[in-house]
Image (cartoon, rainbow, N blue to C red; front, top):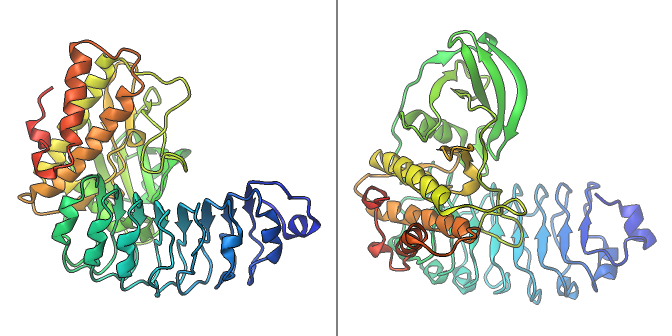
Length: 417
């Protein structure tokens, strides 16, 4: 975090990343003095409502964040030829004009705003890979968006969509889709045993995600160590917390899915009590970063043998087949949402982006099959052995799952390993 005083003094000259949060109401002109080097500009958590018209003077700018401000429209970034990531999460945006974004954009975040429409010119963003639109008021998507053929991740939950357009199923690279909490969504109801928060002895924090925090706890009703997931609020970056809870409660039992034991009673806290997974399990991967955009990252030096990749593939394909048989798309099938131990047993977790659909609509399953293909591709890229029957079998499966002809991809139930 930097200060306005530092910026005005000139002591920040030459930096590549600037982060300012001082309840700014106007864009600091001194930012332009960093034009020769500035690549990442983060003015989140201020009170901004507009940007200068000559923002293109920041010729090196690649990433710009303006979350938690007071913008009511998407500003123009015309001329910002190197800009590929823009974020306006949690503003007041209800206007998105035509031609305001450069064609270089590959990552667009407009979560938690007031948009009722998208401009037709969004179809010109042919490099767009990741588009986050959850928590708006969208009733439809423009047909021109079908031209965004590099789109891989799309978040549409908690909107007002009356239908999912058919062109969506033909996007050749779409892999991670979420649209729960819309009129067109399927809304099954699942009941689960309730426990009082007071009956839990909450211990250390185990982790955190987009939708909430997870704690270790002892449950007197279950007479066991458990994991407690407490949701941060009624809406998250992936959609409504109630939809995520409903997805968790629907999964049933499977050896590669974390068992859901109960939910918190009452309305004051949204929470779930889950099976406790011991710390001998670790995350298979790490989330995407600015460079990889949609693809996971891994710890430095990470490698996977063909045998480990095969075990992970068997487990996740089986878990995904189990979910899709129930008409549930995970929506976030990634290595960073998989826990694995030294014996290569793994769990698929985090249902924040899960979406219910009519089970006969196999096109939704085939979208997620590509995500499975991406998982295979990521792990195979870290395999030191690029030969042998197991490697060749996995490589052939990866190719089938990532087939750009969506209808030719296998279903999870058809994957034999």
